[in-house]
Amino acid sequence: MHILVTGGAGFIGSHLTEQLLDTGNRVTVVDNLSSGKLSNLPEHSNLKFIQKDILACKAEDFTEKIDAIAHLAAIASVNFSWVQPLEAHHNNLSATLAVIQLCEALNISRLVFTSSAAVYGNPSQLPISEEHPTAPISPYGLQKLVSEQYASLFSQKLGLSSVGLRLFNVFGPRQAPDSEYSGVISIFSNAMKQGKPITIYGDGKQTRDFIYVKDVAIAFTKALLAPLEAGSCLICNIGTGKRISLLEIVDIMKASFPQWNAPINFAPPRLADIRHSQADILKASSVLDFMPDGVMNPEIVQILAG
Ligand code: UD2
Image 1 (cartoon, rainbow, N blue to C red):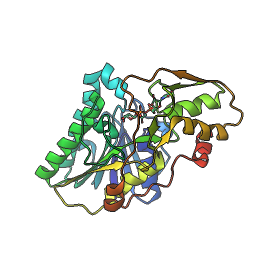
Image 2: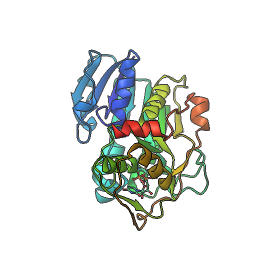
Image 3: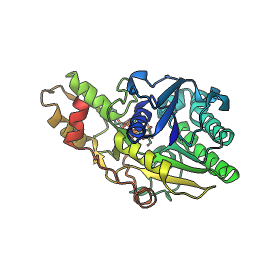
């Protein structure tokens, strides 16, 4: 297959690109390199790279037949969406609509795109199934929810089959650790590598469903290939189905960074921080045959330790 991966030079997109190439596919990556890096991509004869914003792409940019689009280009930050909501809206919502229009112009029948657990807001029950009410508490969550609604509407109109993957807390190599709002595991592993202190916001007993990035890439691959009805939009949680507290994470990580002995600081919880999060992955396992391998464990932390 020939797959167009938007945001393919980014954290999750580059792992997906690698897996698609490893399994014999051709990949065209479109990335504006706002947060992605060329160094995340392998040199490969079946890989073509286009440095462009997806909002500026036209059908003429793609001369070879494309079979499916995996849309991962986004500004995946809750905080950014509060600070610059219009910019976030363009990159997270308008960009999805632009990709849907590309599907129409290029006569593409399968679209897989990133949604987020942020669509649920504060969960009222755990684990969170796809039937849980959606009540986003950030512009980011709202942009992802409306992206799903656009995909559903246009899938019917165009006879497209689309899949929105509601990602839980993704971690793994290439996740940028350099902002206060980066994923907590990348922040902690970076601090531990440098012998620096870490800060836990709250009591550390909050839990998250941390899913390894290579498992997320597998979920995308399965969603690209799954036999689905034309005109349908499938929405699936992608997590491990397990939750783990920050204090437990720190314990696991300490074992992989035995030289680290800097302090653990405690600070007040972040505003609107969710207490617990855990995906129900029954739908992903039954419809996509998705079963994650890489639950947070010492082997994976070893990889992060480099
Ligand atoms: C995740 C997603 C976000 C959105 C949201 C929806 C990531 C990186 N972010 O936010 O995009 O989908 O879920 O609910 O996956 N923490 C510390 N110390 C630190 C950094 C974080 O204690 O230095 C805490 C933080 O307060 C939170 C937990 O660690 O309780 C996880 O934080 P996060 O920023 O990795 O992810 P989260 O769940 O806030």
